[in-house]
Amino acid sequence: MKKTSLLLGILLCIVMIFSLVCCDDGDKEKNDVTPKQDKEETVPESSSENAPEKSDVQGAESNATPKEEDNRGAKLTTDTNLSKYLVRAASEKDGLYGYVDVRSGKYVIEPTFTFADIAFGDDGWACVSIDDFKTAINTSGEYLFKEGEIEDKVSYEGDCIVVKKGDKCYLYHGADYVCELKCEDETLNLRPTSAFAKGFGYNSMYDPDRYIVLGASKKGKSGFSYWLWFDKDGKFLYKAEEAGSFAGDETGYYHFADNKVTKIDSDGNVIEEIATKSSVHNVSYDGDNWYTMIDGTVYTNGFTPLNTKPKFYAHDAYNIIAGDGILKINDMYLDSSYSRFYSFHTDDYSYGFQNGYAKVDGGAPGAWGGDFNGYIDTQGNSVYEITDKENFDSYTSILPDGYFVFGNEDNLYGIKNLDGTTVVEPTYTSLYMRENGRHA
Image 1: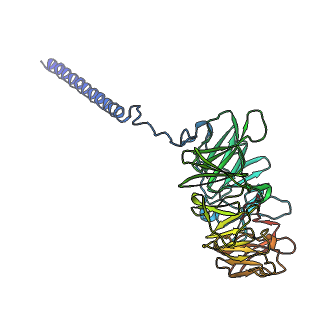
Image 2 (image 1 turned 120 degrees about the horizontal axis):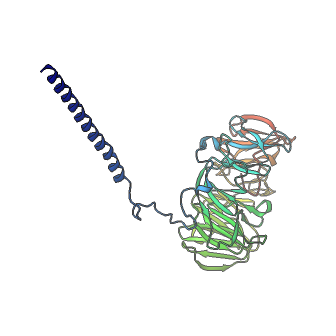
Image 3 (image 1 turned 90 degrees about the vertical axis):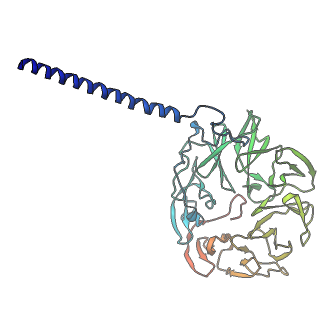
């Protein structure tokens, strides 16, 4: 009897254990199924409603960097508060370039470059080269593109960098990839270039404000057949058969070439061509307003003529630099009423207004500026006089907070401030010099 009771107890235990195991497996199966069902519900089906929106910019297939064109600088950042004080410098004759902080006169980025932009752009990046290696750097000197990644690059005013990779051109805003630049004619070979304006500095080339221009050559042929214009977001605007300059506002776009102005609507259609007597000239922006000179008349937004005083000759070449509400036209400055309030001897070493001041050369006999050499404010008042012992050719426009470059008779350059402080004595062989016709 005892043996029978013992066997029944063992059997009952086995049955209970088996039941518990089966229940546990059932619960486990339920727990395994539930997450799978939830996961399937959270994955959206492929549809036009859920798909990413396509860019409405012509020439931009996507706002994301193509996989094969991975942006090497995507994780890089830059300091835009520091960059506005950094200017190009060299310590040895025909030496390498770096960047110094004008507030201290010390190198922030050591001189290792065979080419460098004269200053950082508003976006905090500068284009540089080491022999054939072309790239852009941030304020820490880090490379945006690695060696061999790009074939060519051009930086444009308006914080745009255009690079050539193979037979394609790509637009970046600093380290941010924007799109591929292209037009409807895929047979053209594209290359970043600069705008053109006769008599506007070195080789008559300059970097245009607000707009981007690519040179286009036919396959197998050298030289440009067309110039393609884009806005800063990569939208294709106009294909020109002539080199020139470009402007735009809410009324449309305007292309200025030799003896012709082309009006273009917002969709890129040519609506009018106007014959002119003068050659192509530059376009200069001051805030949202653009200015150019055609046949002795200054034009601004909406291709509106301005009544300037004095008058200008239709067949002469005049270049305009706009800044701080002041127009510089050759050897004079015009105020907000477009009247002359200051003249100077030559336009070779006199600049447009920047940060509230302009640098002027001595006035010719009878000129309004007299024989003053130095800096003036927007009212024409003398602010800082350049002495005979200082090298005027070395001077450039006023930087933020009143800093500027000065030189001595030995062609060495230092840094001063308009308050009279000498930040660093002339020790650099090259410091913040003009190039390619761009005013500093």
